[in-house]
Image (tube, rainbow, N blue to C red):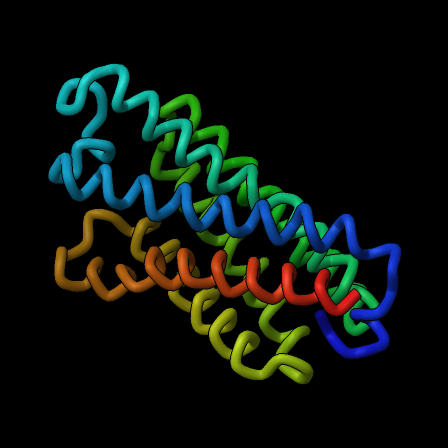
Amino acid sequence: MLDEATLSAPQREPRSSLAGVGALAAGIAWVTWAVVNARTHGGLDAGPSVVGERVARGGALLMAAWNVLLLPAALALDAELSPRAPERMRVATLAGVASLLFWAFGGATRTITPGLEVTYLALSAVWWGGVGLTILPVRRAFGVFTIVLALFAAWDAALTAFEPVPFGLYMTAAPKLPLAILWDFWLAAALLRARRVE
């Protein structure tokens, strides 16, 4: 994923494959959740009282899935990027894995509290920021995109921490969700392309 020498390492093929397919599936889970939530007029956010227990359970499963499915990608990114910035990637990967697990747990159990939301948003900002800064020299467009996503996640965390805030101000963090979905697909393409090169 970084350069020709890194891409040609045969021991990385299974990791890139699993990580790429996982990132692709995570993006699909995100899109599915967003479509169902839009079709139910925000019903997945509202819960079982609006959409029924079965649909609410499905939404919770999708939320857990898009996080758990990114875990192999987080580990693959760490393996690829750690040689460039070991300390930064150690912190970023730890933050990323913790963020994904917290969000998956909160989604699966339908227990996302404001404190938990601020925590996983802030941790995701650290993860994306670390990945973006580390990959920037070798994959500029993806690095810039990842840093922008990190900034939106940090802004979302800050606004969530100080709720209630005016709706118009809160909407300034809204691009984070579509950017995160695009990031999943972009990452999947990069990882699967790296596998083909191997």
